[in-house]
Image 1 (cartoon, protein in one colour):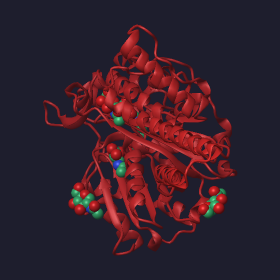
Image 2 (cartoon, helix red, strand yellow):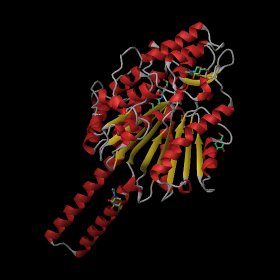
Image 3 (cartoon, helix red, strand yellow):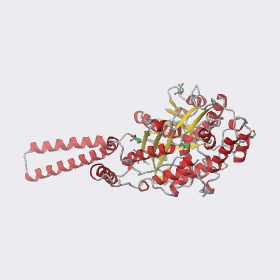
Image 4 (cartoon, protein in one colour):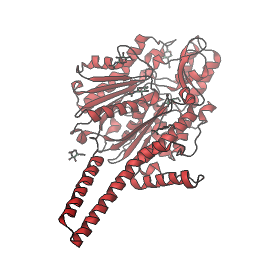
Length: 491
Ligand SMILES: *[C@@H]1O[C@H](CO)[C@@H](O)[C@H](O)[C@H]1NC(C)=O
Ligand SMILES: *[C@@H]1O[C@H](CO)[C@@H](O)[C@H](O)[C@H]1NC(C)=O
Ligand SMILES: *[C@@H]1O[C@H](CO)[C@@H](O)[C@H](O)[C@H]1NC(C)=O
Ligand SMILES: *[C@@H]1O[C@H](CO)[C@@H](O)[C@H](O)[C@H]1NC(C)=O
Ligand SMILES: *[C@@H]1O[C@H](CO)[C@@H](O)[C@H](O)[C@H]1NC(C)=O
Ligand SMILES: CC(=O)N[C@H]1CO[C@H](CO)[C@@H](O)[C@@H]1O
């Protein structure tokens, strides 16, 4: 476990980042500046010509210049129609699926495939992980030994995907026939017919619905789904897209004795979320959020990173996901480099200029100088961090210079629901809403990190007051108890 807390964090901004990547994001800012200054120049020259009473042909020349620049400017500043997050629903796992520690340990010690060392290892991970005794595992994993057949996994998929989907449809008064795109996100389970076909079959959706099933993409998947939906909505006007995000745990259960693979059994818990995105005009009245920015980055080109979380057979042929010691260091590197890119795209103009100047300064003049780090808290009001363990959340928050309040949604989600893979970030957003912290105009940053490794960010801007969420949603019966300050011990 100590390996998990060795999360390296250096300077927040990775200045070794290829200049091209950063400059791409800063270039548009400078283009805007350039065009504005040309515009001012042309206007003032025209004014001076007017004062000096030059020939009309010169006026005409200036006027056409003026119109041309105005058109370029208008074209550059016109953006694609906004994408709205109308609403989302998270599954409230049924209480009969609860996993008290004692029962988990007792049941696993009755499974023949585990030796005594593995049992005590799992017991240790469980008690130090930051999970409470209220987290849930699907029914198939309550059997001794757990049932991990295809049939069970499909039953689990029904149990996970239908309730949030139904809740979403009733909340938004949407008919299944109105959905134009369906994206189902689940990393570990890939049945045929696909999960998206299961949904289409259940709700008898349209024959021309475009469906996508993403799999094997790890914990940051639901943000990949959002990004895919955003790309689709850019092209197709007047459409609704639904993203379903979950993890089927019975497909990922490990029954061997290799420790790096046993972690998965202890940390991952039930959860699923359904999200409705839209670019219809009327959506701007009813929606909760507008998509402000999304950013995806990858490190799979790097061998060490690529191998840091890997699904493979162990020496005795049991399939499981190995979480390597490098995982956290890799996550740190991925995060840092990508945050400088995100930073360069979300900060206001003045901060961007400071950032660019300080990076250039470091590159060209004084190599030892510190890079100016804008404070994320000045532009983003709420943070949904990855729920990968108590210590990791702390380290990520430290790297981003965030405080206890910013870590709270991640810590409390981990405590109440466990690591739910890609859907965790939606439980965190639901937590913020249940606490009525998100106000109109606030920006929320969802940061997903997962195997691959990938680091995906989505920034939402709240566009209407959100009230009454404490009475529905996954936190309905327990929000008053939170935040709980847990006794701190290890990860
Ligand atoms: C342990 O096994 C019993 C009997 O099968 C079952 O009722 C219970 O839900 C199991 N608990 C866990 C946490 O798996
Ligand atoms: C689906 O889920 C997997 C794993 O949870 C994730 O890696 C993938 O990115 C997700 N895809 C989408 C579209 O959300
Ligand atoms: C919704 O869009 C209309 C037309 O584009 C605009 O006038 C209105 O202000 C928008 N409403 C909100 C709440 O953004
Ligand atoms: C994200 O981080 C990786 C690792 O440093 C980097 O190579 C990649 O270019 C970054 N992504 C973007 C969009 O800059
Ligand atoms: C779940 O745990 C794994 C392993 O610690 C981690 O890589 C992943 O980011 C976590 N998932 C989420 C959604 O935080
Ligand atoms: C609707 C859809 O995209 N289905 C695909 C999901 O993935 C499976 C295999 O992974 C494909 O066979 C399906 O066509």
